[in-house]
Image (tube, rainbow, N blue to C red; front, side):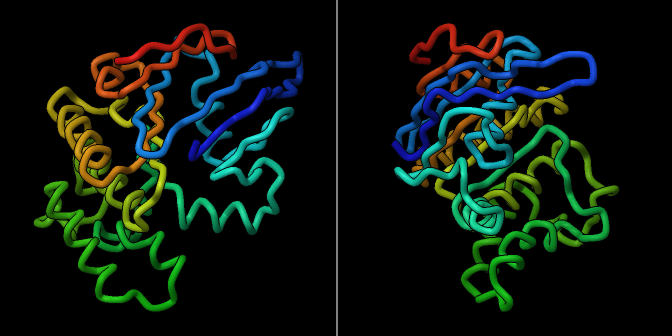
Length: 227
């Protein structure tokens, strides 16, 4: 397994109650696998994805990336892991408004490297071409459509050639045409680059692109099926 959670629970302490977002969830994802996690709102889907990606720590249980326990890693080590090995795409893009498309795409590589080698710039151009952004590299986020913003976010997530791409509702704010483009790109990345994809979505059409669908409800896995 490239990423694995073992008996993971997550509890949030609210002012009025204790909220159990996940309860004893175990999941393993193979290298180059495409997995979709689906379920109703509040099922714990995003929490599980965030824990697998090292964005949150579990209250109980452990998470392993290539057999290394990342659930108790030092903050500096988990930051480095996310930057060098993991990519993230979210529903709300999170582009830097002061940076243009080109600069947003290169941002994770700029954090990793003080000087960007030509091969990184070449790859950024390749991503821009693949995602239909070549003519928009000098545009700023406020000048982009929702679909264009999401494609920039996807290019940014891929610039460091992550081993796992985590996607949290990547088509949630997009129209059907823009969503279809993202769906195709994710399929190509998985098939051609053998990038492992873990996807959270309400879009069952997008979920069916995955090899395996995991159904989550009330913080627990209810069922799994081959797509």
